[in-house]
Image (cartoon, rainbow, N blue to C red):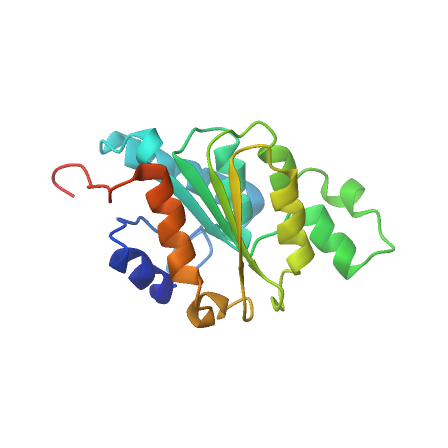
Length: 191
């Protein structure tokens, strides 16, 4: 979202955003294995350009949160921010059709709780009680499952506008990032 990029830019954060295959202007077909590969490719792109792992913050919003959590289960970023995301795909499915055995149907695909079980870097989970797409309880479940250093930022507003209307959103992001890195970080030379 351009609004999120503007907020991060105003906080002095360099960003890399990607369109997963099948989304936005990217070709290919959308699918879980494809978006996971896209996240790995973005991570490798950053490393090849001189960004040290410990200075990279993975930031995932909604479905992107589950993808970021999956990546964080295999790499070691400096921190992880998960906004308006869910604990697992099975939890979301169970919320929609509670009479089906969703854990059997979807297995561990996009299971952020499982993927972050051994994650040790700081995590910020952001969620709104008013989220009309991903229920607040899934964000709380994810947060409560974390053994890593963690913070929970409760915002207000819907799934797609909470970050815009919540007065504490920008301050919460800034405090989390500054608390981890201290001063604002500079991009490697030439970027």
